[in-house]
Image (tube, rainbow, N blue to C red):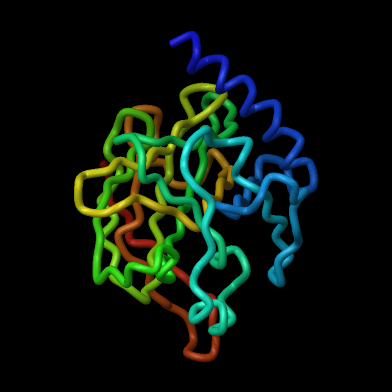
Length: 214
C-alpha cells in the first residue's frame, strides 16, 4: 500500500504540470508518446500529453508504416502495450466527490508485426470490472464510463485475461457537471452501451449515449 500511495503522489504531481495547458480538469493522454514531448495541440484544439506520468509499466510502440500511411488522427499513431503483469493501471488525477467521464481508445495498427486477427482483455475502474475489450484487427474501438471519484486519483486498469496483450492508444478524462447523469452516484457508475446520431443527417457530430449501469 505504501508503494502504491507513493506512486500516486508522484503521478499527481507530474500530471498537474501536464494538464496546466488544458481547461481545468481536462486530461488528454496520447499513450506511448515519449516523455520528452511536452504535449501538442491536435487539429481539434485538444492538447495531448505523454502518459509517462500516469503509468509505471508497459512499452511504447507505434502503428506499422501501413497504418501510418492511412493518416490516422495523430494520437492513434502511438500506443502503450502491457506484455508483462496481469493488471496494469493508469492513475488519473481526480477530486473526491466530483463526476467524470473517462474514455479509452484502441487502434492496434499491427504495432507488433504479428498481424493478429483478434484479442480480448478486461478494463477495470478501481476494483470494479468495467467492460471487456473485444478487438479485431484494422478496427478502431472506444469505451467510455461515467463515475463519481472516490479519492484524489482514480485507477483505470487493463487486465490480461490470457487472450492477447492489452494495449491502449488514448486515455481521456473530462469533469462533468453535478446535475448531469443523476443516476451516476458514488456507488453506481455507468458505461457507454451505444452511440447513435439523433440529429439531422447533415449534422456530423450530433451524438446520443444509451447508458448501461454497472
